[in-house]
Amino acid sequence: MTASNSNMPANFIEGIIDEDLKYNRYGGRVHTRFPPEPNGYLHIGHAKSICLNFGIAGKYGGLCNLRFDDTNPTKENVEYVESIKEDVRWLGFDWGDRLYFASDYFEQLYRYAVQLIKAGKAYVCDLSPEEIREYRGTLTEPGKESPYRNRSVEENLDLFERMRAGEFPDGSRVLRAKIDMSSPNLNMRDPVLYRIQRATHHRTGDKWCIYPMYDFAHPLSDAIEGITHSICTLEFEDHRPLYDWVLDALGFGEGRPKQIEFARLNLSHTVMSKRKLRMLVEEGYVSGWDDPRMPTISGLRRRGYTPGAIRDFCERIGVAKSNSLVDIAMLEHCIREDLNFSAPRVMAVLRPLRVVIDNYPEGRVEMLDAENNPENPDMGSRKIPFSRELFIERDDFMEDPPKKFFRLAPGREVRLKHAYIIKCERVVKDEQTGEVVELHCTYDPGTRSGSPTSTRKVKGTLHWVSAGHAVGCEVRLYDHLFLKENPEEDEDFMANINPNSLITLTSCLVEPGLAGAAPGSRYQFLRQGYFCVDPDSTADRLVFNRIVPLKDSWAKIQKAVGNGPDKR
Image 1: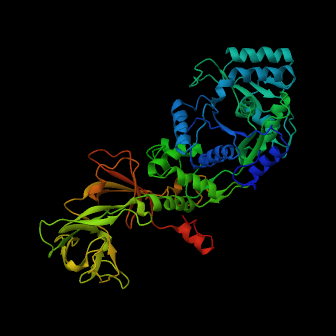
Image 2 (image 1 turned 90 degrees about the vertical axis):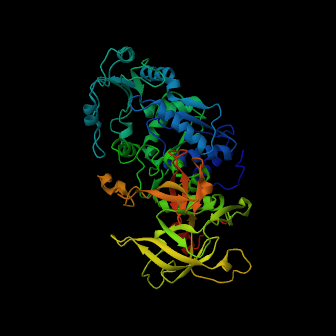
């Protein structure tokens, strides 16, 4: 079997698979798995692993399982299981009938542990967790053997059976592999295979009070399912000798799974540790796992990211053998490139300033033509109302503008997008505060956009909404959650939280055509950025999240180095 898309491997993992197929090491099979632990919500780093595992299986005409590593019941629950399934589906992948749980194999894993004991390769140890760490040694000093290491097979079998029966307190005994306490790899110094842990499991209830460790359950689950290539992130590289030892010790020979490690995704201006993400949630720094500032897949989905943009991002960053920090601007570039073609363009005023066109007839309403997306003519056009009273963006007016300010100012002209050229004639201010509250303008009737008589040019073009037709809404302006590029460098990563990561505007106005927009609908607000309707929206309250602003620093970087974005 050869890869269907290309004769050349896209990355070193595909190179390994090609070699295995060439020598028929797995009978022409390619079978991967995505094995999340259901102890939190998936993040963008998991998206990379999902795309890699399902993508490789798809490319080689193979299979990919979804398997939950549910071996730690104190941190896992059904909520996380369901959220993970939703995220994988949303990204566009399907595991078919291959949904598995490590807990499916608990009885089988127990029998494998008994097999190791009978072979003299595992023993029950009474050392406390602290003593085990002390006996383990250091990177420069070998460990010491446990005084319980040479128990007889019969005693170990009896104690392990009694561990399962619940005779001993939590933490009082463990089952350890008997390998080498002087190994230079600390993971091989008689690692723990089972521990006593009384906790109700989300699937098996209180049936078990002993649970296998990940390093024991993982290779055996792979072997049970017939996995060929077990693709892990780089932190498991030092665990690979133990992965192989478990399979060797239990007699798995030719055709057994092969562990391959790749660099995890580290994204700038965020944290990717589940523990730290949980801290952000539990300590109230964000509103939940799906807060649009979170790097979770559910947070990105709520913010307005598309599955296609995330898959494109994962493909662009590629697969490497060494860790690096990816600029979040690259992820933002991918969503801009996607939405630039697919999102309707509309007008929204976030900080409104009233404009009265004195020479426009009172009571008159014109319906003007506006294209929905000039990058995608197939999206057609719409009608928008124009009237005597409008709102423009407050930042689009200055009383005493600098030389290169081409927006509205006293005595100056601008074009209103899709409409007319107007000129500011008079400014109305609040008598007490001096704040500008209203502009009085005049319009030139011969300058209507699209009219053959409209030949005059002005430098500035502003977006606007009709005062009598606009729909009120709330807009949430999201920015990077952390100010520092790599917040995890500091022990107190919370100190780097951006105090302006969320700015909420409550008096915003949008075109009337957006009334009742469905949650998840995405738009480009002209001159503002890309926005998405939040699930908080109701029939009486429209809420938008800013996905990204329009500025695309990554595209500029790529252009500068001669590697511009792909053309559609």
